[in-house]
Image 1 (cartoon, rainbow, N blue to C red):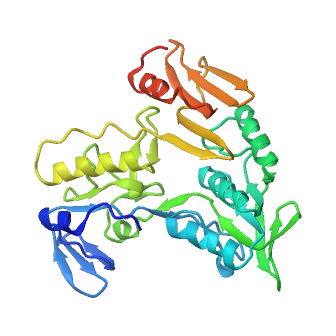
Image 2: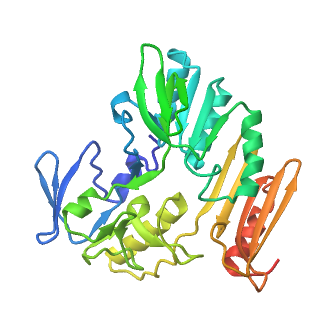
Length: 337
């Protein structure tokens, strides 16, 4: 784990830190929280910041075969321990979103032969369009990754030596380990049980991070928020957005002045296969009349999306990300560049 506050700071701020403690239930009517040990806490205001967990698709054999995930630092440590200690030399990764691509990069760097399976037509399907994704396909193939695109996993089993992954088209892939990187789901079970309004994307909140119960707030991966750029309702999933949500909720909970939450700004920044990557804004489902400019160079690409007034509405950079700051400012301010 990563410590963000020292014990001294916790004491100074009059925080009672209760580690290794599970919340079993929330009673909205009585404004109480019941802990796993049976003790009860009373609250005037409550923040639910329970985050998200790896989504496990309903694939026969997935849960029975101790499939690994790529979500926390502990997950990464355990994967690398299997490579070092168990001599795992091949892996199947289910899902080619950001986590799946990053996982493929880590494992190939440690000499593991990676088979990456994605249901949709290209990697990073939530971010890139097909033409720009093709450049990344080439970089991944050159690094030794075998891509299975527009394929789905039918079932998973295990023989005496390997995991056996059967695809929908009948193709069989054998590997020493399997990693599920099929996205995340909000940990909203406590809120659902308490009768707080939720949907599949998480807990519904207003502009001050209040839930359907005015005394209860939600922030981070568990909250269902507005995308500042597109206006769509999304699952919040980035650290800077979670910090801002928590600060706005805390101010409102304490009765202090609080600005409304402007919405999440999903700016993805990463690096894999020797390439830097950054993307933000509207890159999929671009409205009619908007223009997409893709400039491909030997070292990567630059994808820009502009509306009818030539204002930047989305961008993706692979390789050279030196324009990230300029494009981010343009995206947030509407300044034409």
